[in-house]
Length: 631
Image 1: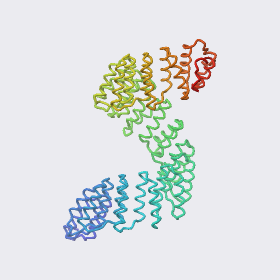
Image 2 (image 1 turned 30 degrees about the vertical axis):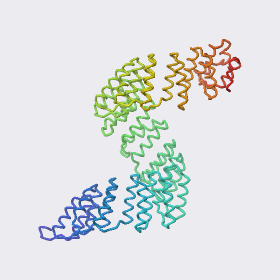
Image 3 (image 1 turned 90 degrees about the horizontal axis):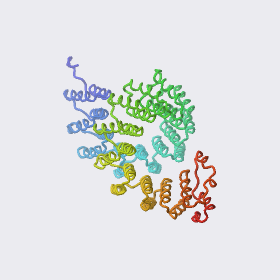
Image 4 (image 1 turned 135 degrees about the horizontal axis):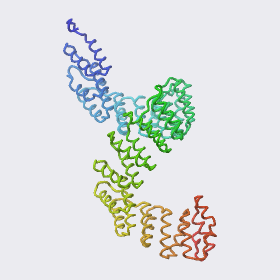
């Protein structure tokens, strides 16, 4: 056209701008705008809005705002569509406050008033940020300005409330709509139905569904999908199938999302035959199962212990081009299932396939396999995987290095665990209290208390905040070494750091003090434990009884037994044996074999007896002790 000295017409250039926007080339559209101005044409607001739309839809909102402020307002004035386009772009970019500020800035320069669509955009943005009160405030502002609320505004607000869990509040706005004579849409009902389904309120869901039908509003695919998901989440997969079939009979064509939600519900309940029936129906209806579909089925098969079927399905995904390719989730689900079953060789084979396909390499899979090999006692294989992980330049996360440190500690491969711990620390990895605790516990069990204390001091110095478990480990080993004063100081320091002793802390202290013959300290701790609303376990009672027995404190034994009976303590074989031994030490008249003639047999049966029942039996042999006086 230029060579022929023919000037392009305004409409031709405007159409070209629209074409470039349509194919997501907003910069070229701006170039055409420049050509338009060069040829002496005046730009109108329609062209401006087309360009703004192109910029905003391509994530160039900042450029769009600069473009607007760069306009000659005397030549072309932005309108409400311009403002709405920019605010929509900002809200999509999660810049809601900037959208609000832009509104006020533009209102000062350009004399236009926001419409209901403007308010709808801002309400949606505010709701997405959880600023629900501000969103509701905009509804009030609309009313003050004389704008009528419509179904879109109400539906936007209801959707925002439901997404944040305020479904009952959303229902109140539905009632308000109806009172004002505003007819709700299928979107309005779908938002509320989905919200109540997520909360497991199926009664409210059913009432809304019936009300919807009574008003002549037909449910759509979103409505049905929400209800199917709600039924599935509440263990009603069979009902979900019935609703799914109703949806098909009504002419709705479910998509992959609906199918996958239903399959997930069926697999959770172990209804695998039904799940594969749905899969066949899905394929018959021309739908292509996606990776989520197959991951759901693989997970369901693994959960039901059908690992062979899961592997077969996985092999089909790899070998048959009609199947979708597996992803990292597929691999991890299958490998985790095989590891739990102990099929480490097969899990290793699948992992090798992952490594061959570099896009499927995942630190989480390595962690699962390393943990499984360590649990099986295969240090060599676990360490091979660890080296492979490093060769692939995968960065261990907190779970992976915690798994390997803890695993080698439990296998008593302490030198390896220490080496890895030091290596992680040198590389700047974030070591957690769990990592420190694993190593400290192993060191204490090995008898290396000083090394453990040095690690504990590192934690105190700021490397990592110690937790209750950290203190329990060090206190236990300190008392085992006979250092009572140091243990008491640790307990004080623990409280000063805002950590409350737990059941295990008290159990450790009472156990160790009892063994050391410090029964007054043990009794004080027992009283403090009960005052802290912590329930002593049978280990605590066992330790106290043995301690009292060693000290010959008969009255303390009897008093504790009465308290145990009053609390309804259930005795296992070990504690029962301790009680009988204590009473034998008190009285030579007690015949253990007569009371429990099948003692050895009851052990294999998981022996237990209420303390009160045992005391009643013992009372017959030892009436002078008055064992049942508290009963």
